[in-house]
Structures are given as structure tokens and as C-alpha cells.
Amino acid sequence: MELYYDNKKSQMQILKNANSINYDINIDNKSLLFKGDNFDVLSFLLKKYKNKIDLVYIDPPFNTENDFYVSKTRANSISANKNSVLAYSDKMSKEEYLEFLRERLVIIKELLSEKGSLYLHIDDKIGQYVKVIMDEIFGEDNFKNDITRIKSNPKNFYRRAYGNEKDRILFYSKNSQKNIWKDLRIPLEDSEIKEKFTKIDDKGRRYTTIPLHAPGETKNGITGKPWRNIPVPEGRHWRTDPAEFDKLDKQGDIEWSLNGNPRIKKYADEHKGKRIQDIWKFKDPQKPIYPTEKNMEMLKRIILQSSDENSIVLDCFAGSGTTLECANKLGRKWIGVDNSDVAIDKIKNRQIGEYQFIDITKVNKINTKQKIHSYEVKIGNMVNVQ
Ligand SMILES: C[S@@+](CC[C@H](N)C(=O)[O-])C[C@H]1O[C@@H](n2cnc3c(N)ncnc32)[C@H](O)[C@@H]1O
Image (cartoon, rainbow, N blue to C red; front, side, top):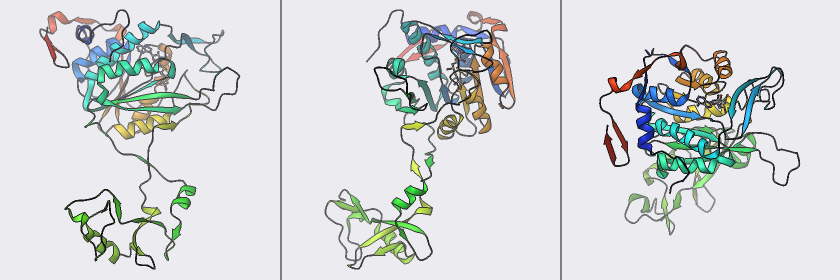
């Protein structure tokens, strides 16, 4: 499945363009903050960080046809007043916008490591087109989730439609079998504990019980054999090797009913927490320092879930630097890019740790024809040596 629009380049052409861009920059071993167009910066990063970035979160403009200002009173005002300065402009045609984003996504895929993930923040209007181009670039098999993010309180103004309180985060991996996944959990609420774990033992511990068996029959395996002369019910199998049940029973972790039916005790204080689902409530700050500034706790979840402590986290539409500050707080190295002076100012004022700042607009480009004699552009099974 492919999306067609005018002036769509081949992925090979995009990578060829990226490979022809290089800069004479010495990189420290610190986090990196770039001012400049992210196509240029990503192209430069390709020379040093190909397959090295474990996590990318991006929150690009959403093709809203608006200008975004920072005013002295409110950061997210989109109407200019005499005290406001333009933070960034979001006024491309739909086709221009999709190609702009696609060019960057093609390079991001090259930068991602085998265990890497990309989270792309977008809205409902343009999001479905973006999903199609992401499927093209990353492959449908690498699509993980379309996360619904509750971003605001319910809207109360009248329009001939439902209020909009959500946007989306499209989550892809470079390799769906290898992406870093920490299996974060959410602790149960007190009310959920009371509802789920209704029994209390003589030590005051809340617990519930579950059957020893689960759906699905085992033909010849150990989990299909009787335990203490109790046969497995039809169409079911023991949850574990029945020898484990002996251990549990000895520990007092099996509860026997009056008519001799055994069930396993599950304690509330041993519950690992709920698995995280694909609807997230992380409202944006009430008093943002930058238009469309995102929620720090949301970034915390993403970074903790999909990166290791030694991972590099990249945000090439960094805005006020929410991702960069969060990565720093969680002990990760980060790379941030923005082409807005206002954004760079805001980023520099955040707690982002030690970093090297590079204004790429002021660095000389290298003539790559002299430097790079041959490189490979690989897309699917095609290999083109230039
Ligand atoms: C929606 S804002 C990001 C907000 C950010 N997530 C935060 O929490 O503050 C998008 C940012 O992308 C930047 N941007 C847009 N086009 C860019 C480009 N070609 N290169 C670098 N940055 C760009 C804009 O200046 C803007 O700051």
C-alpha cells in the first residue's frame, strides 16, 4: 500500500541527498544540541550515528496552517500581539508537509539501532496519511501501537461535532522482535485492590484465588497428567508442572474448598501492576513555556519503556526541550534539534545537563564528493552503489 502525491521522491533519492550533506564538526562525547534544519542535522548524524540511536520521540508541526507565537503572558497563543515573537510557522500544503516529514523519517530509520523505537506525535487530521507513509518506510510489521493521548479537558464550546480531547502517538520499531521493552506496569489503585483481592488471610494480607488450570488441552505433556489423583478438567491444562503445586501447598499458598477443590492464592502485595494499554491520559501543561509543549510524565513513560540507561534519545523537533530534559533526568544521553531561535533559548534554560551546542547554520559544509567516494543506499532488496 502506498500514498501517492506530487513530487514524492524515492527513498533512494532522499538518502542520496542526505549522504551528499556533511559538515566539518568535531563531536564531543556529550549530549548534543543543534540549531538548524533537521534535514541537514540528521544528514550529518548519519555519518556518525547510523544504527546507533535507540529511541526517537518527535512532535513535529501537525500541518495546522497556523503560526505559533510565544508571548510574554501566554506561550501557546497563536494570535500575535505586540509582545509576542514567532516561535515557528506551520503553513505547508499537505503534500509539501508529508514529503517534508517523510524525508526526515527515511533518515531516522537509518539512525535507529536494531533495538530502536520511534514515537511520532501527531493529530487526527493528518495522522492517517502519516501512518501510511510510516508503514511504507518502517514496514507494517514494525507498527506497534496507535496510542490515543488524552491531551486536554473536555471542550465545551459549540460546534457541529464532538469535542476533541485527544491526539495520537504512532509507535514503530526498527525490528519488531528486538525493540527495547521494559514492560513498565502501573500500580493498582486502592479501589482496584479492594475489588480484585476480596479475601484477607490471618496475617492481614489481601488475596484472591485462581484455578490451578487454564484453557487449552495438553495432549501428552506433564501439564495434562492428574495431580494427586485429580484429573485436569476437559479442554484445560495445569498452569504449571504439578510438582510446583506441591510446593505451593506446603507454603500454604493453595486454598482448599470444603468440597476439596484447590485454588492458588494470589496476594495483592505481590501484584506486579497493570500492563499499560494504548489510551494514555497526559494533559499538556496549563502554563506552557512554549506552544504545543508536551507533558513531561508522558516522555518519562516513553523513555523508561523503550530505552536503556546507555541509550541515546533523539528529538529532532525539540521545541522547548521536554524530551531532552526528561532524558537528562533519567540519565540518558540525548540529541536535540530545532531551527527556531525561540526554541533553542527555551531549551538552554532547562535542566538538560552537560551538552555541546552546534549552530549548524554557521558551520561550513564539506564537499562530500571529495570525502565520500562510495556509499551504499539500501532499500528492501535493492542495493545501489554510488
Ligand atoms: C510541536 S513543536 C515541539 C514541541 C515540543 N515537543 C515541546 O514539548 O516543547 C515542533 C517544533 O519543531 C520545530 N521545527 C519545525 N520544522 C523544523 C525543521 N525543519 N528543523 C528543525 N526544527 C523544526 C519547530 O521550531 C518547533 O519548535
